[in-house]
Amino acid sequence: MDIRLDNKVALVTGGANGIGLACAEMLAASGAQIAIVDYDAEALPKAVEVVSKQGPAAKGYLQDVREVSALEPLVGRIRKEVGEIDILVCSAGINIPELAHEVTEETWDAIHRVNLRGLFFCNQAVAVQSMMPRRRGVIINIASQMGLVGGVKRAAYCASKGGVVMMSKAEAIDWADYDIRVNVVAPTFVKTRLSDGMLSDPDFKQYILDNILFHRLATLEDVASAVCFLSSDEAGMITGIALPVDGGWTAH
Picture 1 (cartoon, rainbow, N blue to C red):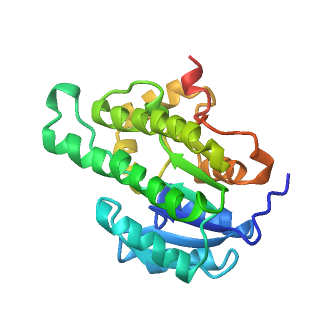
Picture 2 (cartoon, helix red, strand yellow; picture 1 turned 45 degrees about the horizontal axis):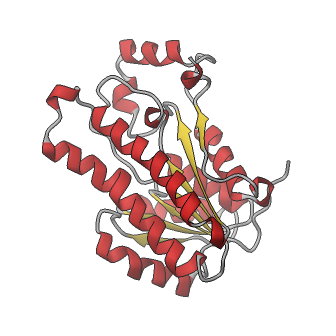
């Protein structure tokens, strides 16, 4: 299947690194115009350059999604400078691994401010400003397999990603009358800058491989391919789902 997204505008949060960058690259290669939102001032211009080589020239926006009051003006600026937003991919996220009895209020709030609160208000700002008035749009929220199953040292993270899953289902119901599709992609462990520390522990890495039926980590391309499919017209009857890209972890 040759997925084409020509003449579409895609906004990708957390798009300067890791999964977000891979999604931005593949969406651009499929013909979409990309707006990258990230708080990493050093990585953002590099990401814009990389993504621009895949398709139409990308544009970067330096913004932390934790600053909710800045999201509505940001979306307005992107609409003016790039165009009305057809696709929103929310990939910005963090994790602070701690056992449940060690989680502090500060850790809990730090994780939820990015993974759930910031993500929700990105969804809302794009839906209200750009998608609902035109009665069309696609929102894809990057959660995790840990939003579907539990994991060691993941109490706060699982809560945030499980919240993303259920929030997205509720949005899919609320916004169906506007022909806005809302879905979740839930990856297993992927080798990125953020996961390098965890994967350097040989026992933890073996635990991961033992739980993935294919006995390998997911690739960035595995995740981006799922995002591109759900962004496309070929997925026009798919909304309100959480698609695991987990090599079978959640099957057992």
